[in-house]
Image (cartoon, rainbow, N blue to C red; front, top):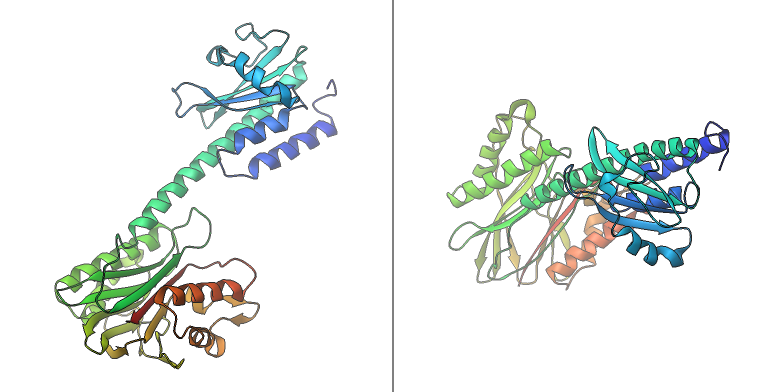
Length: 392
């Protein structure tokens, strides 16, 4: 322990400690890593205290001792310790029987995040104090980064939830299943979305779309699309007219605009099943599965949204007999990659759907999701959305 803090052994330890602290973005894990980095190398035990804000009271969040049998007893001793009076020195403000205590404030970006308290039976050499302060600075930065990451992730999860349907309606004669899985890091908001909502007394609308990119810019276009679809549908605009107006709304966003692929349709229950009018704006084609296992594409490819000003959309009308299934997906399914192959190469999605004859809508959606997941060994780098409509 008396080895110089400038020695290569200490520098190697400092580098390892830095790697450990930088290796997690979980704010609950950082205190545990701090304690287990310094014990027993610098001290016999370590207690980590944090506060919810810069002026809030400190509370112990992690305690570690080289002798695990002594942790409970030490916790009781530390319960009355005034860590708020501590300084970065061995100080009489903190007194424990048969122990010297070193308190190191955890401060990052000018904000106090807490305190790291170290204990050992003998005095702390100056070089160990210096080293502990260095660890404390790195630990505080790791803690602050983890907190910021967690806050951003929570905000993005809330934003993502706001971009999905608040509820899913009951549609006469319709069995449906939906799946949505964002990909990427937790700090990204996905660009895929779906919707299913009541548009009138006897009609319902559905949509599935994919905005170019991720993050707040994509989320803004997603929100614009969802709200425009609902508003115009409830005002009586047909699916083709809705897409024309949405295209103009996206273009009016100017430099903030992102192009969007979208499949939008309306559903009307009829005696023999469901009548569906739909438009595919640059979106992967929708497929219909018959109870016999026959699969066919049912949409006409048309221009994606947010690129061309003068675009006229036309709706395709299809009929779903009882037992027929309509499948719509985003390119997180069709372009799932394994080496040089895509899932939908040579009609791969249709072949996968053909295996789903006789299944419920939810079972079909899950079978497609599982097929996409199993197509490649690595996790998907793209968002995924699946909408399955089945005529009862």
